[in-house]
Length: 367
Image (tube, rainbow, N blue to C red; front, side):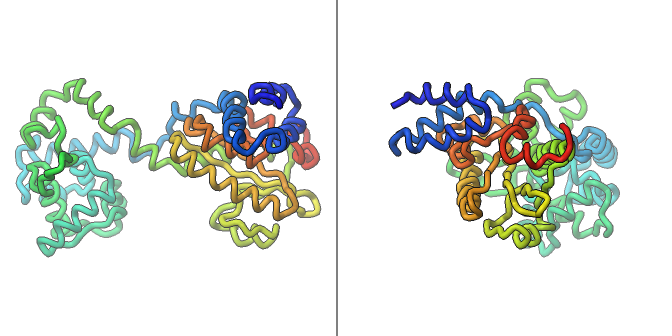
C-alpha cells in the first residue's frame, strides 16, 4: 500500500482530471482509519499553499473611515466644553443638539450598536424611558435618521453614557470579569477623557487598544458578506470571459433554481452550471473564512452538497475557498477535498478550475 506521501506525490504530478480520479481512489487504497490522515496530508501539501493572504486586506466602509468619527468628535468636544460639561443633562443636551455624537458615546463605552441598544433597554426600563434599537442608533450616528431624536431618547442615551463612564451602569462582577469600560483610556472616567482629549493618547495605550480587540474586528464583521461577494464576483467574471452558462444563487432566486434544476438541498449551492439544453452540469460552493473553527463548521456544508450531487447522478461538486481558516486540514480542508474529489480551488488558482471537466465542454468563448 502506498504511503500518504506517495499518494500526494502521484496526485500532484497528474493533470487535473486525472487528479480527480486519483482522489476518488483514496477510499479503496486505504483503510477507513487512515482516511482522515491521508486527506489531511493531501490538503496540507497540495491545497493550503494555494490559499491567498485574504487576511491582509479589508474592504472600505465609509462609516468606519476617520472623517465621520472625527466630525462627530469635534461636535462632542465643542458641545461639552472639551468634556468638562458631562452631567446627564449636559450629555443629553449635546446629543439632542447633534445626534451624530452618539458615535462618540458608543465608542467611549466600547460597544457595537446592538450592545449600546441593549444598554438603553436596561436603563430605559428602569427610568421609564424609551429604548433605542441598533438600527436607530446607527442612523443617528450617520445623520440619516428620518425621525428627529427626542428629548427622552437623548436622556436615556445620556444616562447610559454617564453611568458607563462613572462605573455605575452594570453591577461589579465578583467572578474576575471586567466591564468594557475598565480600560486605560477610562481609568479615571471623564478626567482621563479630558486628559487624552487635551494631551493626546499615549501610543502605548493606542497599541494596547489594538491588542485588546481593535484589530479591524468590527469592520471585518461588517464586511463579511461583502468579502464573500468579491470572491464570487471574481468567479462570475471568469465564467463570463469563457461564455459559461451559470446562475449565482441568492435569496432572490433560491426557489427558482431549486425548481429548475431539481435541487433539494437548502440553501441551494452558491453557483450552478448548466449546458445549452438547460441541464445541470456542476455545482459550486464559495466559502471564505480566516478562522479555523468556522472553517470546520463550514466543511459540513460540503458533505450535504456531495449527497445532493450524488442524488443528481454524480454531478461534479466544486469548492472555491480562501482565508487562513482553511489551513486547518484534519477536520476542515481535508473533508472538503474528500467531498469534492479534489475539485477545490482558491483565488490563487481559480483559472485552473476551468481545465477540469465539465468546464472545457461548457465554454462557448475563448478564455
